[in-house]
Image 1: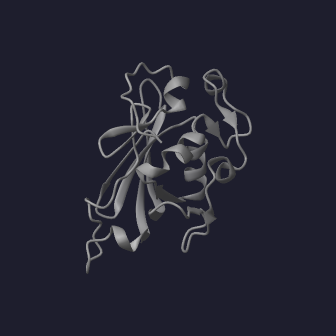
Image 2: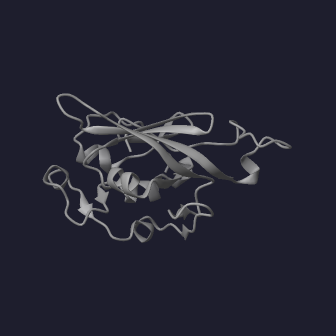
Length: 180
């Protein structure tokens, strides 16, 4: 996924049209957004340069992508059934959002190369210790999300893990030493 942002119960996801995820979302019309904490950087990075498409597109193969039929095993994560949607949740993710696709907006020039998918959250699973006590609001002081900025993995404002994705995409970067 290239980008994501939320407003209320809706989220806009930006994905390339050659991605298997885009095809899956357009076909199934459901998903789970598994929000990883910064401590999960290693598991997330093990999924870099993998695709669920049995035939890896030439442009992805050229930068090192490979087919992976079991991403849960590759990442060392646990599959958990969704309560409302058919898509699985990642048990280790402290926030899991079950969603339905509300709209798809292809974009690009001269022809669409990406799609903005509007998804609506229909069930949220949040670890209790991430909530402001006595509310349903996530405490920003307790939640340290893993964020990818320009193909590098960050948490708490610091680069927390060198990403294989950056190397595959030949992204120039200056990493600060990590405490990993």
